[in-house]
Amino acid sequence: MKKRILAYGRLNDEQLAQLGQDFEVQTFPDLASADDPAFRSALPDAHGLIGASVAITPELLEEAPNLEAIATISVGYDKYPVEELTRRGILLCNTPDVLTETTADTGFLLIMATARRAVELAELIKRGEWQTGIGPEHFGSDVHGKTLGMIGFGRIGAAVARRGALGFGMRILYTKASPKPELEVELGAERHEMDSLLAEADIICVTVPLTAETEHLIGEREFALMKPTAIFVNIARGQVVNEAALIEALEMGRIRAAGLDVFEQEPLSPESPLPHMTNVVALPHIGSATHETRHAMAQRAVDNLVLALRGEHPINLVNEAAWRSV
Image (cartoon, rainbow, N blue to C red):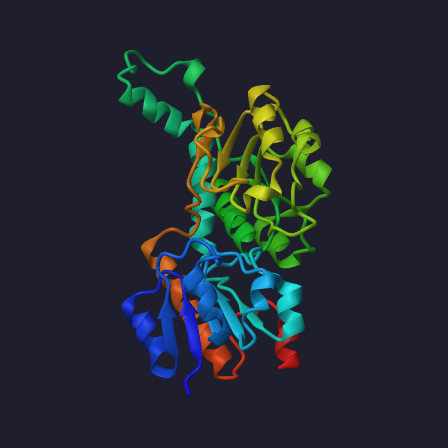
């Protein structure tokens, strides 16, 4: 009897066919929540799950006694109870590497657009208000030669820093990461304590994963340490930042501007002041949203799940301890 997979992510026909070669596949293309009755009723017979953006809770796992593996179509895994999965011997796979460069592109897009006030000035043209030469009231700030502070220096953080150092001659500081001697040589990166980085950096970019330790890592105290000319960019997770403190810092001029691809609540509420601020560039979580990268992410998730359900080590495994217990 074939093992059964519940697929609730964006998989194309070829990827579904690949899964269907060895497994029975039930699709939920419009699944918004794991509380969906059809999804819940299918859980008891499921051996594998593949998808993204749907939170899987320990309570749900009680309804899935046959579950062996979950393949999330994302690099982040904050929607999964990793310790509980490991305790049950359920493998959790993710998709690092394939989205690194695309997400770094998004980070540097936000740096450039925010520093040069690109969105604000494009809107000025749309409103027909470009009547004379652009004066100091509309000037932006240079990116080249500035100090870029990276909070988080993993794959994505290093890729953003590489763009800054090699493309724009930026000085690179990093924190909330283990020492990276190779990157220190390659990029001239300097490891700093958080407070020092916040005080020195002209542009601060956050790329840390969301964990219990990083939730609200950046709040009122941290914004107060930044330069009043600082630009703050978040391409990590919205919950890493205390959004109320960010709004206050922007409104009070404690920092100059922010470029945001993530928010505490997504989709962002229409009531939020952030997208209406002229010193904010807000994007709808597009970090990895290109045709090429989303296809590669889905394919990596498929490959991970196929390997896991065949009893082979997946390419990307979050909870290695679960593999050792299999």
